[in-house]
Image (cartoon, rainbow, N blue to C red; front, top):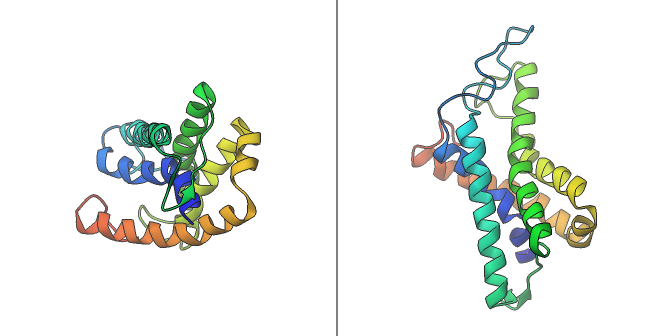
Length: 181
């Protein structure tokens, strides 16, 4: 479980940081598709995309620094994100991919008629995971396969919805989210 969370930290942080630091110009520029709905909506902004990605990358780099000081935590040996520019690529794809996964699902939710913030259980909790995994697998398949074993994948799929719901409730109560889901 610790390894699963460790590997996913650069992907877990960006969505909440996009909500905290977001706002401003929407990515879709306010454009409406032929179905009469916004492409993404006001909640998906360039500032949120950049800030979320940057925060995820900073956390990943802190994790890499931590590994220069210690190799584990609570008796668990922690994996590296790679070496040099390879590690930066993995950290970037985890962070940016998580936001792309969330953006993609927002697009599909709009096409299905869901309003901004409307819940879509399970999908809302795992869309960013799928985006992070897909982009990271494309960019660094060997690293991905070496680190995301079946047991790690299963742990992430179980832990993530619980963490997602918990952090969204906190975000709602501190005023950075409009809905507690």
